[in-house]
Amino acid sequence: MQPTFSSSRILLPVRPWFIVCSLLLALLANLLPTAHWPGIPDWVALVVCFWCIREPRRVGMGWAFLLGLAMDVADGAVLGQHCFAYVLLAYTAAALSRRILWFPLAQQALQVLPLLIGSQLLQLLMRLVAGADFPGWGYLIGPFIGALLWIPGTFLLLLPQYQPVERDENRPL
Amino acid sequence: MAGIDHAPPPFFKRGPAPLALLTFYLAVSLALFVVDLRMQSLGLLRQTVALIVDPVQRVAQTPGSLVDHAVAYLRGLHDLREDNNRLKQAQLLTAPNLQRLEHLEAENERLRRLMAVKDREKASGQVAQIMYTARDPFSRRVVIDKGQQSGIVAGQPAIDEAGIVGQVTRVFPFSSEITLITDKDQAVPVQVVRSGLRSVVFGLGNGQLELRYIPANADVQIGDLLVTSGLDGIFLPGFPVAKVTGIERDNAFAFARISALPLAGVENFGEIMVLSPRAELPPPPPEAPGRRANTGAPRKPGGK
Image 1 (tube, each protein chain N blue to C red):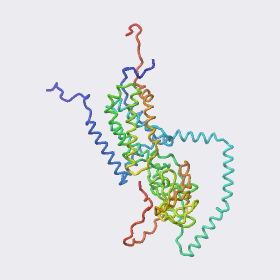
Image 2 (image 1 turned 45 degrees about the vertical axis):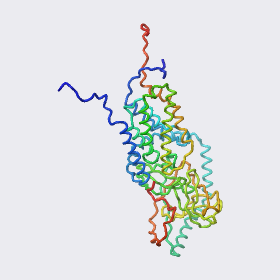
Image 3 (image 1 turned 135 degrees about the horizontal axis):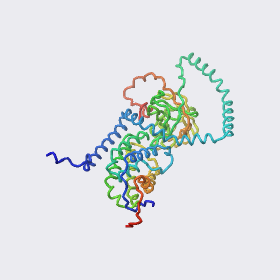
Image 4 (image 1 turned 60 degrees about the vertical axis):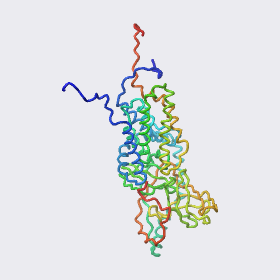
């Protein structure tokens, strides 16, 4: 049986190496040469947000800070720009995790959207204050795509934690 | 007593309070932001992180380069032959000029020596491959595959076959960052070929350039070629930079609004040449008292 998101199935405990791998994969996805295409979401922000909501005790602001630093250097942005946005995103996500997890997936995506937009807007604001030009509205499409990807993303990232459903024909409960 | 454990079980060990952590990380981020922006003294930190991120970046570039290779492979013999013929013809067309260039340079040198003018510097450099565009949407930068290992230093100009592309602004161990001339913070001192007028050309951030600080009545026409003036001591004089595409003369402003398009394939991918740094210019004469320094000074090497 395929797992459904509406079910409150008991998940296996998360494996730490899987979290690390997913975060590094997100970093890799961010570094793919897709900078010209509009609407590419910030994968690192999305995955950091996901783990901060799902496992706030394992992934927190420390990871967000380190990944932000890596993104700053890889992007050629001002140091601290991504760090600031990611750390704040991680804190908000962890603080709201109990509430967000209460909702079904589509509504979770709606709640994650303002977080992602906020982190993007924060970066925009920091650079505008620093004297950069507005890069166009395409810059703000990313978070919407990211929120749409929340549903398949949740399925993918929770995949290793699903356990097979064992149904005992003799004792159907 | 021995049996009683007063320490809380590890379940409750959660480290510092989230709010304290948040304050700490935000403060560090802000400090980094301000220091990097205002003092630009974080080169070592940047290089260290770059060294760690570099392998991930290389892996991320492989799908793109694989596709490129596959496309190049599948392009077929016909296209290549056509290319080859075209290039041969182009070479033939430029051959007369090139063959006489050496002679002309020698003659020029002799005449210059006769007139006791200092010799022109020869341009030399190394070819580098553009790896990718930096993802930062707020600036126009590309990353090339040569860095400290190849002796690149910040400040070196980069050209392609048509003209100036940009300037090396950050150097990492195995790669370096080139700020394109279309970047908002990049300035190139230029000269109008036709009239000899000198000015500084600035990027606008949208692929265009702007010639600033030219009086409204100055002799500039649409189609004028702008070449580097070499006054900055960074760019060698005479490299084409841009062509004037529009002039707005408004009496309300002291300066004309002159827009230009870069000649080099600034937004293209491909190979570029990083020119060796110029020999030091003689120090400028002491400034006359009461005169302010010229605005629009060229970017110093090592800048942001």
